[in-house]
Image (tube, rainbow, N blue to C red; front, side, top):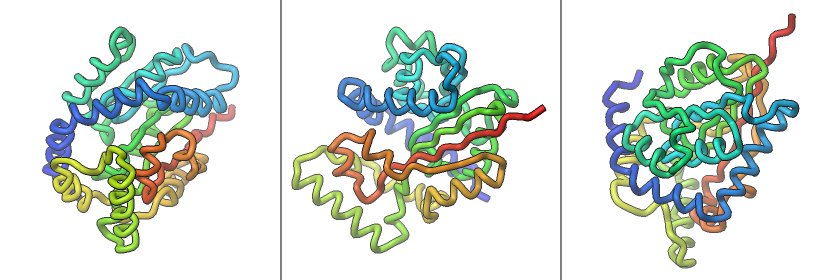
Length: 262
């Protein structure tokens, strides 16, 4: 069992990273990434809810960070609730949302211990969060709990810190750093305090587990129909991201909660 200090260390780290991480989201909001991700999210949701207009669907974003997904989802017309563990991230998210800030419900909350009632949301979505959770099983249990029957789970993530445990992954990670430098691309894995995050990642259970196979197995065990898209990065990442993170490609885990048959 992981000690509460892990949670406080994590919160402290992301508090310090809030402004810099917000810069990344603001860049996404003014580049082609905005429309790529809008198309992706809307396409995934409408595939599950073909006959439901966006305003009738309640969407929960878990780990909103500086608010990128929440903003796009509200622009698309969905009823959006966005949670994060870190108040500094929520402050950045509200700032980034501008005039939309008042149309999104922002809440400080632990992804592993949510206070929502059962079956509250039609869609639960998250990006780059589960790798950073001390108890991912508890998080998934909670996310499935708050999904309505027939609901959709969308989790975008990657094997971000596999290089800490595998020599081949480390070599590939090092090549990404070299290639980014040679191509003059802003390397998002170079900066202050990355050693702190690596120390935290070494103690996170998913860092040394091959995914998305683990996610699919666990979600099926707790009752979801699942599938993975391991090529989603090709459609939503910028050329710079593809260069930065070629050794850790983004995947999408989809989970569908069976409707109750009466």
